[in-house]
Image 1: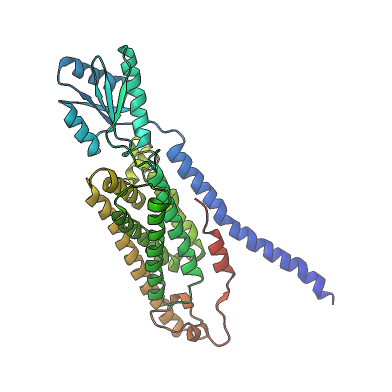
Image 2: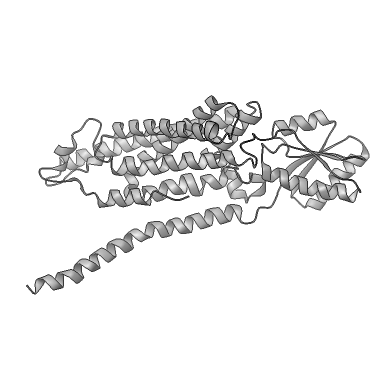
Length: 377
């Protein structure tokens, strides 16, 4: 009877160690999210933000050079011959503002490209026009849809699709860990299809973020979601309960901050601007902008980025399949070893690998904790 009371403190100590070990993950998430979000968004400053001054005479050249020198690297100012050329640059995202000097100065912007960049440009040229003693007339040559007045709806659509995708990785890898890898991969593809349909519903009938092009939006949403899910399912074979932290680092911390949905790379530190050129969130957001607002200009490059991430997901699943098959062979030749059912090759029976009377995944606590951690942006 004396053993009973002494066992309680030991059990409590073990439970406390268990809790403390699992607190590492949310604390690392806290550090990672703080570094990523604050590093990317806390102090946006323009650098090499391309703007045009319309005109070919000496006055236009002097104004452009003055703005270039005064900006000290914030702006990249060029002159263009006429208004049509300036509009073309805006519609192909070669510039983010065009100033037409004169007695009634006009500023051309394209808010669909980036509302925050347009705001920065408008602030600069409002001061220029005020210095010339004239009010500034602002013309938006590419306005956003009525359901997305800030131009950031596509970014938040990406957030929703991303959460549905990376959170599903924990479920497929945890609760579905007893399934063959090909079944988990099929679940990932199927889940991405459902997530993409939810995204289309949000973008179209629910909130009206776009007023046309829902078919192309669905295709990019599926490709984007499938890439995340396949990469996550492949990584789960190696990272196990650290998968949630891994996919959050890839598809939240680095992804949301480099997507250009809030600030374009010209307003961010160079690290996030560099990621913008090849990260999947940037491919999704910029691809949607191109498809919906800019007549598909540059769309092929953005879709290529999404396709390459999808291929990377297929490669991750392939490598995971080889690793799981190797683990099973090793377990089969090692006496007294129970194979991890999550390492079964396609079609293998989990019950046989688990051993007589053994639970396929232990008590399921790690999987449950993993799924509970798959939250937050």
